[in-house]
Image (cartoon, rainbow, N blue to C red; front, side):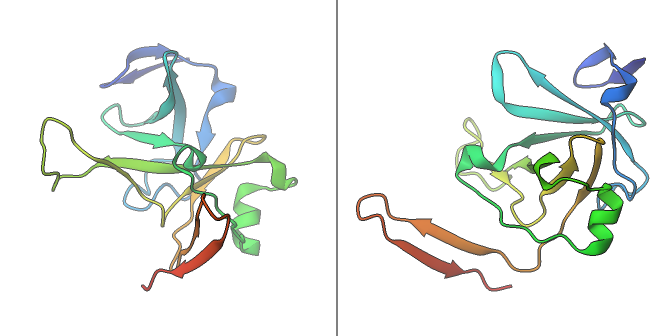
Length: 154
C-alpha cells in the first residue's frame, strides 16, 4: 500500500502495520488511521503519520527515554476500545512539540505531553489518547536512593 507524507515523502507500507485510533486523537477526531515510522539512525524520535492527511504527522517518543514511567489504570471502556487481552501488549508514547517560548531559537526546547499519553495495543494495532486529569510525579534522588512524591495540582 502506498501513502504520501509531506514529511516523509511517498512510502510503501504493509497494511497490517496500520494503527487504528477508533476515536481519533483529540483535536483530530476524523483521523483514525496512522503508521509509525522512525529513522534508522535515530532510535529516539518516531513519527506517527496520518494515512488520511499527508500534512498531519506527530513526533512521538517512548516516555522511558525521559525517565517517565506511567502507572496507568484503564477504564473498562478504554480496555474495550483497545480490545485488550494482555497488558504486556500495551505501548505508551508521548507526543512531542517544540517550545515556542524558547529563549534560544537556534536550539529549540522539545517538550512532551505527559498528561496525554498515547496508549497502543501493539498486538492488535489499536490506539487511543488517554487524557490524565492529575499526574503524580515521583522523583528519585540518585545520591541517597530516597523517593519523594510530588503532586502536580490541576
